[in-house]
Length: 298
Ligand code: THG
Image 1: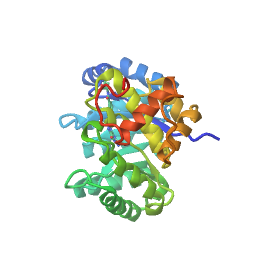
Image 2 (image 1 turned 60 degrees about the vertical axis):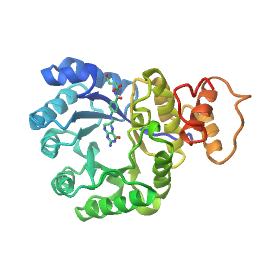
Image 3 (image 1 turned 90 degrees about the horizontal axis):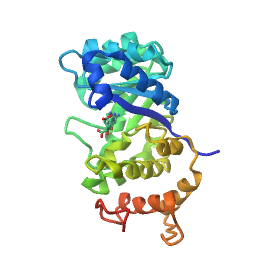
Image 4 (image 1 turned 180 degrees about the vertical axis):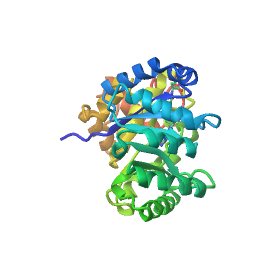
């Protein structure tokens, strides 16, 4: 059986062209259309990202949840940095046990407010490896932060199986080292928190890159993460090729990239089409080729 990744569809968000305006105007139709499109594309979860929503988050999040639940049974992933909005959203979620809280980070005041909400809801929780001093610098700092988060969640009665650790994807424009340390963390996760899942905001890797090139980075990065057993990913579900990778429909590309990660470089000469795209993009994401926006033409 081919390896699969559960897709958390990212497009219903306050920054998005279609969804952002609709959220501000409390216009349900565009959001409901997107919820149906994302579900049809095969999303396992729908991320509902209202951002910090400082002014009206406690009213906006429940509205978005109910708007989406009116048209689909796909489980939801509530995404906001506003802890009160998160709590208000979970009050109205129908399918709480299958929903995801996105996210709890290793910041004391966020943990204090949100862990009890997650424990009561019985939901899944994304544990974001982001602490009081920001991003962890390497895989050891990520591991230490993951242990802290796991202990705090366990103390509230939340089992490992409900935890999804997010090592935080960083833009390739910052270099390949950070990406390598996220991958290394994933390889350690089963020892740190047996039974726990994982997730990553895939499109972070292509942040700041020209729009028409982003999908290549996101796709190959996903395949790389699959080598270490990534269980879910926050994705653009409108990229059918990316969704096909999630569904386990590209085993030949997965073997190619995983083989390269094991040190087997087939060389570009015998490759064409999407295999060649993944080959060249892997070279960039692994740091063997320095990133520039002409990497696919080299
Ligand atoms: N980890 C976790 N949660 C997260 C992130 C993460 N939530 C937010 C973010 N990162 C993932 N969500 C998105 C949503 C949209 C885009 C990127 C990440 C995006 N949108 C397009 C753009 O800006 O070009 C299109 C916007 C539009 O619809 O017009 O890139 O890392 N746990």
